[in-house]
Image (cartoon, rainbow, N blue to C red; front, side, top):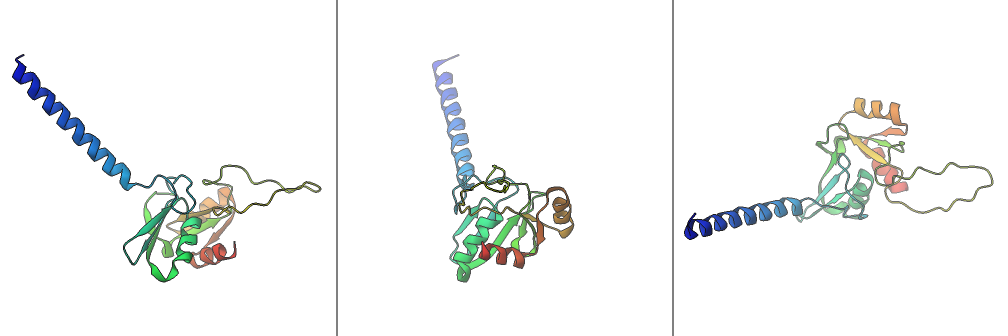
Amino acid sequence: MSKRATIFSLIILASVGLGGYVAYHRIERSKPLACEVCTRPIHEGQAYRVELTDGSGATSCCPRCGIHHQLEHVARVAQAWATDHATRERVAAERAYYVEGSDARYCNPHPAPLREPGVVYEMTFDRCLPSLIAFRTDREAQAFHARHGGRVLSYREAVESVKRW
């Protein structure tokens, strides 16, 4: 192979490599790696997105963190999106159904301590607890509830629950 062909091949190879690197990092940078509210990892099927009227927004690890964020910026919320746990698709938060307090805990994988007489437990605040998992339909939420416990809530009930915790 001639010197000219070798140089040309190296230039093409470098261009393709650089282009792939730039494309990959643009795509990856557009995805938040951690919850913008509590800094925990964002789990597939749990993400919650709040978009504000100024064009900014925050992606959170779970509906509970997302609703906390909404309540902190209530006058500026343009839209909120939950992720349907069953299909991993976005659904308008106010149309979703939520299961609260199930045994499925994505943000905090440690099991809840059982209350036993005479045992002292440390009480700590965890923004992500009790768990709150979104579903597109009441039927999906009820089926999940039957397997994992907790209680099924409407959007309004979920917001009221977050206010109380």
